[in-house]
Length: 241
Image 1 (cartoon, rainbow, N blue to C red):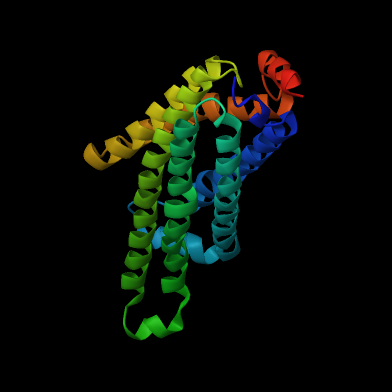
Image 2: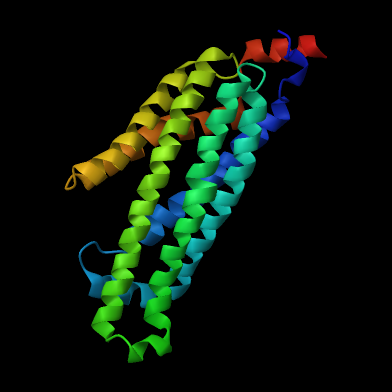
């Protein structure tokens, strides 16, 4: 292989897995716990009360999301370096979709999260809007954040698809993870396009994504941390030394 000397080190792969685990923890906390417990779909009053009564938790959710997106920049670069020797173009496109998904769209979408609290806690707005109107606006901003999250998920679904193809083309990780990431890709894309075009099944699509992502992303993450890579990749790495 012409690019054998460019193969990523085992330490780099394990570091990628560790960063990926931190992303999963941070994003899971923000989306699953913070917004999952504070946001009540269709109930602007209860949502506003939850946000105001748990202001620190709501702000922490934004912070952990931003940390996850910052880490995703590093992960995108590392994944490109890991798979570049096997297919440089595919690795670049895959990492580009990941960069657009969360570091770009996801980070900008956090403005909706922030402003949902801002409209409730800014005294200057009380003269322009009634309490009920501020609550409705806050709820609308959180709904906008939800749909922004779905748009980012569409890009991330394509990233998972391309990452699965890279796993099949290389010997870095067992090919079973390629199949699992295909499932994760399908889950993200079904949630994004399904919720936009066939509303009313959000609970089912969220369940599909949760299971598919747990099998694909979480599984690959722990493999990177514990195993690092396949034995054949390790042998290839030794030949390059």
